[in-house]
Length: 345
Image (cartoon, rainbow, N blue to C red; front, side, top):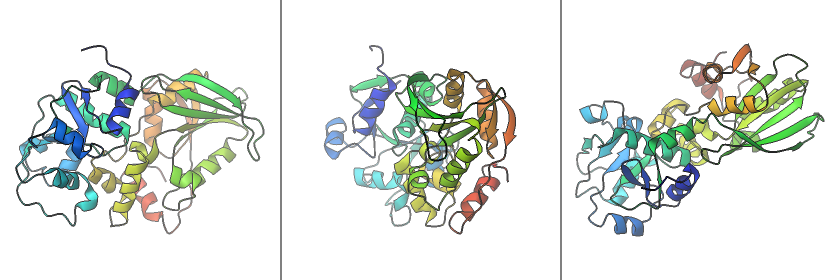
């Protein structure tokens, strides 16, 4: 096989419903692959379906040895398990109204490392973590190492910067970064000057619903605005493209729909087949190093951000608390962040 192209090319192909090669696995997204593509690559309707351990547990497969080992699970195709039913199985929106006519038989994927990387690729692509395992000459290929390197990239290249005066903050610059592993773009907002001490830094994960539209379901918008005010005398805000705790905008909206049915934010992410928090802060550390900082004061209530930066070589000299008041729409969400995700009060 020729040298694999950039992960960005593979992500684009997966989103477009094309077959991609991840190590030993040739896969198609259950969500984006068309019936015509499936008919071409799986004419006998025999292709197994690869799902995550969390989704297997949601489908009550965790009591089976194959699904209880914590790794990816392959669902064996039965004659009654057609494409339409597979799509309903992998989408938790149908968990209440779906009728399964027979037992679901799980199996262990032949190459666990490749299967795990393929599911990680689906998360990076923002699609459901469910993949057809097909026999095909894929249009693009990537190694498991390339996938995991992209997910936990420790490289960030500055590609542009400019002054960006904001309301109430005149001395402000925007610095754009590109992650060479997957082509993703992230930005840093530099406010004032640190004045000889470690800068006050806020790691803010993108939240379109909260930051732009003022959603009351989370505290992201108020956190962003408060952070800008707090670092206004000299600090850095990193705006990271990690929507929905790393599962993407579409999947975040799916999680919201599940929350409307009674699940909390952690349960909703897991029912979709993702970890409760899939973010990684290695790229944030790389951005800080590119800006010339290896020691910071971190504005956060999330211990995972402190650990993530320190594990990537950034010293957190001080944690500065960052807490927003609750409203009737996000009180349960804030409580779940403390009780299940370990956020500090």
